[in-house]
Image (cartoon, rainbow, N blue to C red; front, side, top):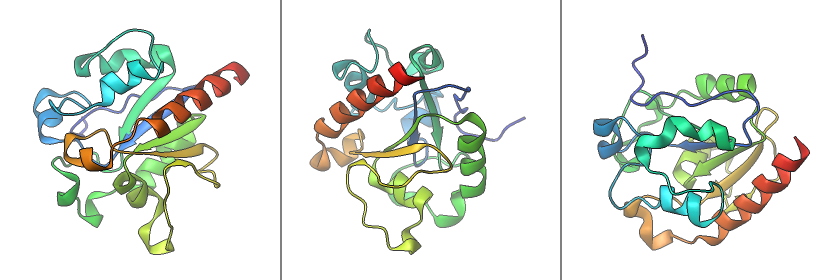
Length: 173
């Protein structure tokens, strides 16, 4: 039995896997990804054309049919990103999952998740958008967080760029 707060939604052949830091309090309580009332994730998926119909947090298990999966860098904790501690992050486990399932793109929902996975100690200057390096064979895309707590940094434009990339990638697979 897993002690993960939210289950991974990972299968082979996914176009994009969204990766957050850890489940937020509301998501943990409801057992669904991006369930906080101020979170723009589900609306953004639809508005950018990543999914053809409006869906919500309780539909997260349905997203592989659209080539979309989910995971977090810290699976056994929940709360705001500010509460994330280095030892909460399981980089070895995260990289093993990405290597095993080999999505075309790993999209980090927020710079904090990307920093946790890519390693702050490497001195990376992270910018939104497609990154120059692969992560165990998958392309890497960093997005502005959809969390209501990060609304001051919000822009849908990188999400639109991701949607275009996903569509191009899905045509090649």
